[in-house]
Length: 294
Image (tube, rainbow, N blue to C red; front, side, top):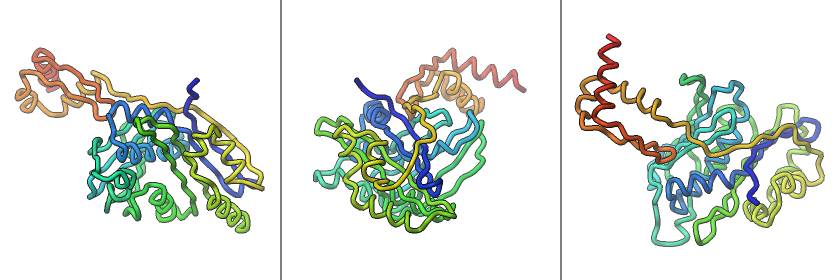
C-alpha cells in the first residue's frame, strides 16, 4: 500500500533546535508523470518540492502560500514550486526534458542549474507580503537553502534533500529535513547533530530501505539526543487551476489583445498541463464583459 506524503515539525533537546521533515515521494512522482520530467529535471523539481513543503509550515493564514523560485543561466533554465498553507504543491521546470549525453551529468543538478538566484516569497490572497533573493552558491538546492537562511534570517541551518530514481524513471523515495539552531541553543548539542549528519547514510537510500522519516531522525540524525514530533500533516501535489482563473487572466489582456484571439485559444496550465478550450464564442463573451465594465 502506498503511504501518504507528509511533513512534520519537531523540537530537539529542550527546544534548543527546531526540525522540519518531509516524505514527498508521491508528490515528486506525480510531478514527474505530469511533466514527463527527465532525470535531472526530476531531481531539481523534486528537491524544490521537498523544500517548499517544509517551508510552508511557517505560513499562518489558510489562504497564503510560499513560492520557491530558481532563475538560472544553466541548461535547466529555472524552476518554480508553490506550496499552500494546507499542504498542496504545484510546480514546473522551464526545461523539463533536459537530457545529457553522459549518465553522470544527468545527476549533477548544480551543473544543470549553473549561476543564478534563489527567491523565496510568501503571498496572501494574491499579494506578496514578503520575498528575499540570494545568489546560488552551488545549485544543489540543499546548500543554497541553508545559505539562504544564514543570509536572510541569520539562522544556522542544516538542510538535507534526497531523491532516488530507478532505471524506469520511477521515484523510489524523496524527502528531506531542515534543522535550525535557536539563539539559546547548546553549542555542544549542535556539534553532536553536525557529527551525526556527517555519519548518516543517504536519506533517500534509507527511505528506500523502508525506514520512515521519524525512524531516520531517531536512529541517525538525533542519535543519542532527545527529540519529539510536535505536529504532522499530509501534503499532496494538487493544482488550483480552473476555467474561471484562466478567464480572469485572459480578461487582463484587454480588448484589443482578445480581439486578436477571436478564433479561440487553448491555454495549457504550466503546473499540471491541463488544457482549457476557449472557443471564439467564449472570447467574444470575454470582450463583452470588458465592454460592460466601462
